Image (tube, rainbow, N blue to C red):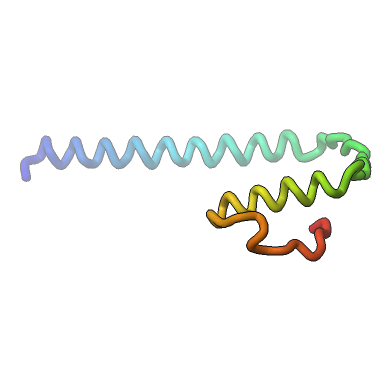
Amino acid sequence: MEFSDLLAVLMGVGTVFFGLICLIVLVWVMGKLFRGVEQPSPAPVPAPERTVSNGGELIAAISAAIAEELGTDVSAFRIVSVRKL
């Protein structure tokens, strides 16, 4: 390995580490600058209650989706109950 090759490798590695050190310093300085700034937290909005107007349509849609996924007929299984997770 010649001297010029070694110099090129050392310059490349040095440039990378210098850039990383600059990024670390920049993040540290920005952390110090913005530490005192408080952001107002938004008030939590309660989720609206969802009601099903027609439970039979919901069961039919769920049954059709399951039957399509399983590749069977809808009459091959029975849905006993549906609950929100």
